[in-house]
Image (spheres, rainbow, N blue to C red):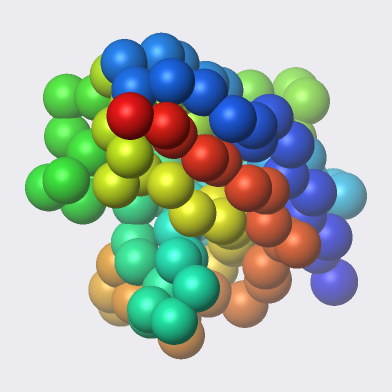
Length: 124
């Protein structure tokens, strides 16, 4: 069992930056893909970014490419999502997830473990 705890959300103005953190309860990175998803009330959960430690690959939704960066610290069992040039449409609850041997990194049903989420609100 893996427990994930997100932090770093908050309320910011458009154009500002935030860094989200996802701390895992145990070492996961060598085997798992770690992802970030966003959900707005009344809408489906949306893929944001993922990192595959085994291959060192990163993946991004088109809506965040060039603005968001996913990274991780193996020693701290922590994954980060650096969000720059934030827009009001980035508002939502951000969830961290861990999945093993994913076929589709952007598919939320592929992930096995989820955090509780952290709220990000961007004002125009």
